[in-house]
Length: 481
View 1 (cartoon, rainbow, N blue to C red):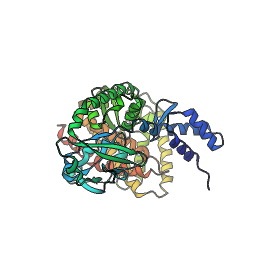
View 2 (cartoon, rainbow, N blue to C red):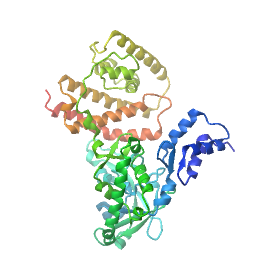
View 3 (tube, one colour):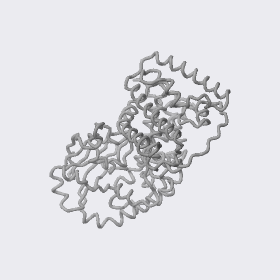
View 4 (cartoon, rainbow, N blue to C red):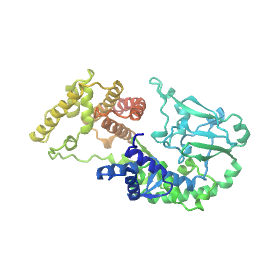
């Protein structure tokens, strides 16, 4: 039998913890199992993996809480779920974001098991719906639990569809949901296996429980308001934020009859839920929930002749690209006949020869460029997946389109501060997507992960029409002539 890897030993040890632990104790136990000293660099990587682990909550740099410890304390708390009109009409159940914070991180929605009130598994099936019919069931889900089976209708976007897994309730609806306001309680049976049980929750009982449920929501928001002052607390996402707060609440508050994610989010006063590409969904203080507002005023650009990395030179010149984006663009234009390098360089750099602060800066840039072109030419001799090349090309096209919009605005002496807020937010969202995606496409080896490619393909189906709408608004509807 082959010896387990250090990564596997670390994963096994994490899964064994059922109470809070310290990083120092973790590494001591891991070294004992590994039977040799763990280097400092390896320990640093392992520490990072602890901070990002999908079943651990980081309290500070040294303390962690495993999900198993959290669920042992709060697992008795059921989730209150109100069925939507679609669910009542079709006699189905769509979990969506309403199972947060109990959604299993290592399972897709279709892999969980739902039991009826008597403990029998409910039948499930994949069903196709228009996006507008079901999107509100997933609006608080991060990328991990958001459905990916999308059929995008390029001609009539409103007719685009989404395939999701639904659980058939059949006679349970008429048996238990007899009055307006009747709903379900969803109890966690086994987190690791993704097993939940539906129980009826009559409207009459829910009305009696509202005061205690509201007390739970108030206590959670008070704790979250304190924790959200620390930016690192937001990095783990909504589920970890909620689990950490629930774990530290006292038993009296946790004796509430149920918790409803939607009721909780709708009750918030000092916090807002935000979602950002590549960062997931998380709660932040209301005053910091509109980051686009800080870019309404443009800072005056004073070039100083930076001669370091491409990022430093581009920033000094006020260009709307990073070094990694530039490299990804070069990969695309050198491997495709659809782009003219002269036209692209004119778009990126203005084509007047007066862009650079000094001749020295000009020479440093072209030294970087020659080195990069040599590396790319060598790498282009090796084959690459057509899917990877096509997704890179589509993303580059979006980025070049954004730069084209900025060049048009500059030519007409229109600044970002002059744009309507909705257009400014749209530009910021599209640019953030390009920056994060092209960062992955700025290298050919190793190839991007399959999940990243799947997510990018899905995102591009939605982003394409948004980009076309932005160009139409800027070029034809702003009244710039």
